[in-house]
Every structure is written in structure tokens, then in C-alpha cells.
Length: 70
Image (cartoon, rainbow, N blue to C red; front, top):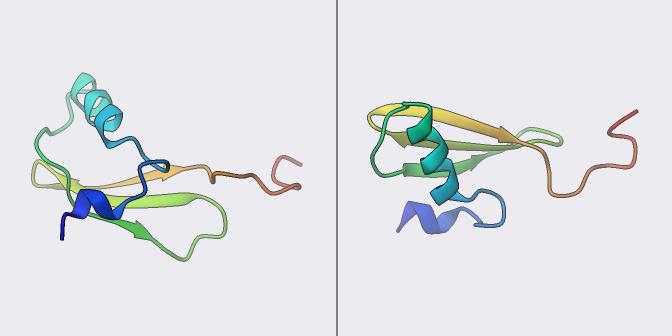
């Protein structure tokens, strides 16, 4: 299974993330073992490995709850 295909491209633009990581001088290479982490109530958490290091990307949900910004 191609791990990159398992993550919805609307949630995370892997190409842009890779460009940003490179600009920040973070490890380069292919994104492997991508998967969404569960258990949160709002934020989207994406686990992945790149350059022999593990990362978790946290991003806001697609649609905010009505009371999210109170």
C-alpha cells in the first residue's frame, strides 16, 4: 500500500509540506508510514517519518465547531 495515498490530499498537501521542511532544514527524503492519529476531538494529527525521524503534524479541522473561537 502506498502510504502517501492513504492520507486525504485535502487534509495535507505533502508536496508543500516537503518544501517547507526543506526550507527549515529539516530531514529530507520520502514521507513514509503516514497515518492519521485518532483520539483528538478537533485537530487533525498526521504522523509520518522522513529522513529517519518521526514527526506529527497538527492542523485545524476542516470545519470549525460553532463554539471553537469563544
